[in-house]
Length: 92
Image (cartoon, rainbow, N blue to C red; front, side, top):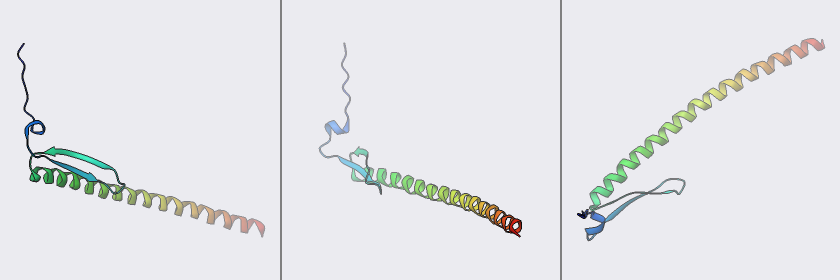
């Protein structure tokens, strides 16, 4: 049987660089192990771009949700005001 050996950089390189990221909650992410600093920085930059975009998307989503909740509360307040007015008229 013929044995094929794969040469991986992490098995043959003298020096490797790992790219890690830590989010605002303290979670650590290993983005990869690379042969050059440039590759490690590129991986981090790509991850950071996605992370910031995800944060912006969440902010936008929460803003929309907050507006919906405020509208629902305002509608509920209108109903409460109508009930109070009806109770006052009934007392007269």
